[in-house]
Structures are given as structure tokens and as C-alpha cells.
Amino acid sequence: MTDFDAHVRAHRRREADALLNGFLPADNGTETSREAAERVAPHVTEQQRTILAALKKHGPMTRAEIAFVTGIKENSCNGRTNELLEDKPGHTPFLVGVGRRDGREILDLTPAGREAR
Image 1: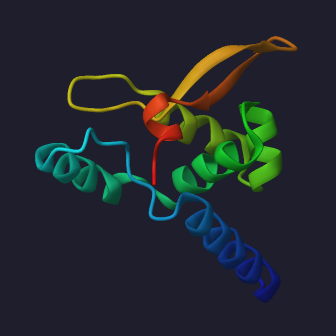
Image 2 (image 1 turned 90 degrees about the vertical axis):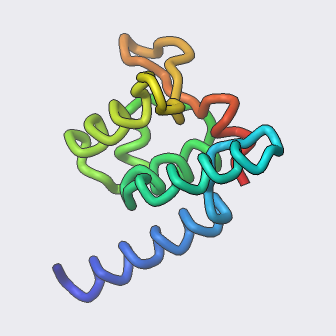
């Protein structure tokens, strides 16, 4: 990795952190809910945080658009968005499909993601 690449990566990380402001899934105000949100936070990877920040800043986008805006390779972006879309017991999905554009699924933050601090 060149110095320039490292600089760009650090800038994107700072921008994502600033946009997400310590991103946590929304909680309902109870201590138990807040503790659960804090337990989930460390499991959000750097690329996932960058994707969430991009959606928070730019609104709904396709995976290709997310990859372009974030600079994450499209294959990596596809994997990370699939992880963020997962809806399984004990896991709150961060993304949801909201339609299609040019045959590609448009993704947006879930209500919990929109309410994140």
C-alpha cells in the first residue's frame, strides 16, 4: 500500500466515524437494549462502517454505487452488504432492499440504522 492509499484509507475511516458518530443500532431506551446495541457494535467491520456511513450520507444506492462512492472493491462490497442484510435470530439487519434500478437492488439503512447515533 502506498502512502497515498494509506492516507485515503485513513481519511475514509475518519469520515465514516464522523458520519456514524460511534454508530450503534438503535435501542428502545432500556438498559438491556442499550447493552445489546453496544455488544453488537464491535462486530461491525471497517468496510461495513464505511458502507453504512456512505448510505447515511448519500441515501439509498445499489451495491455498484456503494462500491464507487466508498472505493471498496465491488466483490468486497457485495460480501459486506450481504452481511449487513442478514436477518437471523439475535441479529438486527442494518440494511434493507428498497427497490431496483437498472436491474440492481437498491439498499438503504433499516429503521434501526437511520436512528443510529
